[in-house]
Length: 347
Length: 162
Image (tube, rainbow over all chains, first blue to last red; front, side):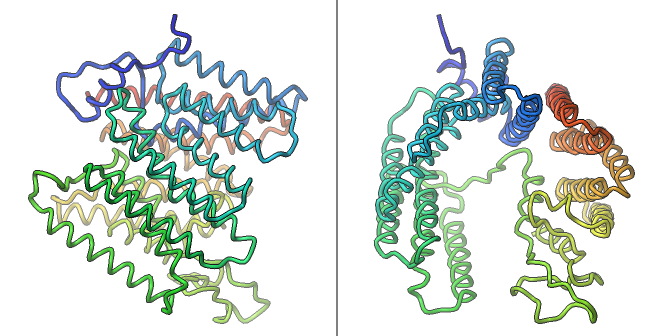
C-alpha cells in the first residue's frame, strides 16, 4: 500500500516531456499548474488559512492545532481524491499546516527552532516533491549556521559547500526530474543565500568589507563556472555568474570610484559580455547554443509587476507649512517627491 | 523597453509602488492619475496597432492598462468616501477582464478577474460587517470561492485552447 500517493517516476518524466511539447505524450492523471498560477493559488490558500486561523482565534479555540490539521488534511484530501499535485494549492496548505503545527510545540527560545522549521520545509518538500520547499529547508539550515556560530566565513563556506555538492550531484542522472530541480535550486540559491546571511550578521555590527568572504565567493564562482563549462550546465553557469557578482559587490569598497561610476562600469561590462556572447554563439548548433526562451505564458504580466517595482521612487518630502515643497527636501538622486505632470510635492 | 516606458509614464504621472500595501494607502488623486495612465496606455495601444499592426506589443499594453485600472479602483475602494464607486469599478473591470480572457484566451486576465474582483467584494462586505468572527468566516468562504472559481475558469480556458 502506498501511504503517500503522488506522481510516480514515469508520471514525472511524462510531465517533463509534455513541458517540452513533445508530440504524442499522453497526460498523467495528476492536475498541475504553471509557476504563475501556482503562486496565485498558494497566496490564496495562505489567505484562506489566515482567515481560518483568525476565526478560531476569535472563538478562543486551539487555533494552531485546528488550522494545522485542517490544512494538512485538506491538502492530503486534494491529493488523494482529486489528484492535485503541483497546483500550488495543496503545496501551500501542506507547508503552512506544518509551520502552524510547529507553533503548538513548547517554545524554549533556542536557536535550534530554526532547524525544526527547516525539517518541516524539508518534509513538505519531500511529500510534495517540491524543489522550492527543499530549497527553503536548505536556506533555513544556512540561517541556523549563521545564528548559531555568527561567523561570516563559516556561513559562506557552508553555503558554498552545499552549492558545490548540489552541483556535483547534478552530474548523476536522477530518475525523478523533481530531484534535478531540487539540486539545481540549491546550486543556484545557496551563494546568494549565504551572502545574504553574512549581510545580516554584519549589519548590526561594524559592516566592513571581508576579504576572506570575497575570496570564498570567488573560489566558489570559479568552481561553478568550470563545472558549468565542462558539463554544459547552464544552472551552474548562472550560479557561478551570481557568485562573481557577489564577490564584486563585496569588494566594491576597495575600489576608489564613485557609486555611479561603479554602476556604469558594471552595466557596460554586462552589456559587453552579452554582446560578445550573443555574437560568438550566433548560429551555433553544437556545444554552447543560444535559444530564445519564453519564461512563461505570463511574461507580459510579470514585466509590468517587475518594472513598477523598480520604478524610481523615494520618500515623501517633508510637510510644509507654507510655500510648497523645498528642493532641500529631496532625499536622493531618484527622489521624485516633486513629481511630474503637474504633481505637487508628495507625489 | 516598452514596459520601462510605461513605468516611466506612470512614475511621471505620480504613480509608484512603495510597498504591497501602497495601493490601499494612496490618495484618491493618485487613483485618478492611475485611471488617466491606464487610458493613455489604452490609446497608445490603439495607435500602435494602427500604425504598426505587425508588432506584438498588444499583450503588454493590455496587461499594463488592466493592472493600472484595477490598482486605481482598489485605491478608491480603500477610502470611505469612494468605497462603493471603487468596488463597483473593480467588479465591472473584473467582468470585462474575464470576457477578454475568454475571447483572447489570455490566462492572466482570468487571474486578474478573480483576484482583483474578490478583493473588491471583500472590501465592500468587510466594511459592512462589524463582528470580527463573521469577517473571518466571510473571508474564508470568499477565498475558497475565489480558488474554486479560478480553478474552474482556468480549466475551461485550457480546454477551449486545446
